[in-house]
Amino acid sequence: MTDHAAPPSSWYRDSIAVDPGPCLPLEGEVRADVCVVGGGITGCSAALELAERGYSVVLLEAGEIGHGASGRSGGQILPGLGTDMATVERALGQEAARDIWRLSREAVALTAERVERHAIPCDLEWGYLHAAVKERHVRELAEYRDRMARDYDYHELEMLEGEALRERVVTDAYPAALYESAAGHLHPLNYTLGLARAARDAGVSIHQHSVAVAIERGQPACVRTATGRVTADFVVLGTNAYQAGLVPELSGRVMRAANYMIATAPLSESQAARVLPHNDALSDANFVLDYYRLSGDRRLIYGGEVSYDGREPRGIQARMDAKIARLFPVLEGIPIEYRWGGDVAITLNRAPDFGRLGGNLYYAQGYSGHGMALAGLAGRLMAEAIAGQAERFDAFAAMPHRHFPGGSLLRTPLLVLATTFYKLRDRL
Image (cartoon, rainbow, N blue to C red; front, top):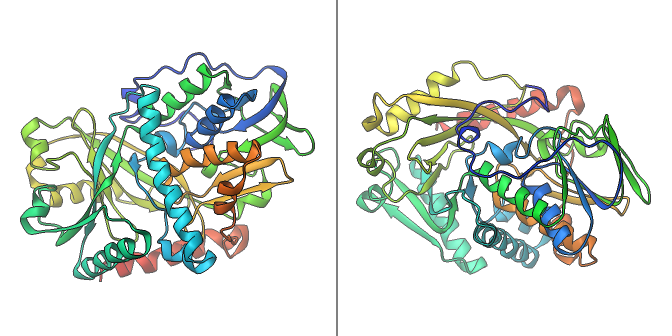
């Protein structure tokens, strides 16, 4: 799939409930305070926040709003990062790590606030299970619960085992799970479209099918497309896995990783009650993890597997179907009606990469599979920084990041080799 081709058919695309209004391609020359590149959650959030602060904003989206991970993901809304907070502690110290944890919780609250304020029909539900697949995971999850309570004053994690666990997920596959009441899930594409609609209502000029082909840096900067150009005092880059070399020095700091999802036919109420009775979302504790939840119309949406070379892994359909069959024999005979995939951007340490270049180009990328809430916060923090209040943005920007080793030729093979090691470890 090319970067800007029409997104694949998915249940999300077939259940759109939000119209962001006309978003025609950019034509001609435009002047704005800020040009936002990327129409996912990062870009739409930044555009909305900036417009509400009185800035004139032009948003360029190469495909359609929500084309990337923002419109294809599992839709999990979680505090924290794509890495353990211990990674942040080692890099920045415990007090800075606590600040970042608090900001990640704000990201979750911000998501809920926007859903309510802008009346976004995205099926937001609360409740999340971090499931152990083997006994060592049980010990690790218990240690994580205790550490988060002790060091971060976070008490929203409850260990469930036996019948208490089966009351929330009806399978014998997991010896235990942490239940997190402060996390949840939603329809990611409708949420992203809702942010775009709110941004447009606030005065943002949104242009779909407007690929940014070059950024000419300076004061002001210029962002060029094939049919137009935007001159702006600031540029916000929210392209994540779909940057395609637009800012070359950022490319080696993230890797694209393809993830795959399926959606069953709608379940009956009784079938849903024998899968996820309380409509929680769930992910397992493996390094290459699987995750699932119920949709608003009671489909089981299941995601997992990974590819770094852009090619669908061999036998993936059979493996994913078999996983569902093992977890939930009650779903035997329920057809799989949708299959789709998409790319996320991961960093070497799995922490998000925030920063600025040249003083007026801001970026946020590399959410490492943890971006549904964090991307919305990133947009707010970049808007704050542009408005002159950069302390909270700088808390994330202080996180050190390195390029993936191996250069452009060996980077992917080395990452595949490392992931193969962790896949083998998952089986032990």
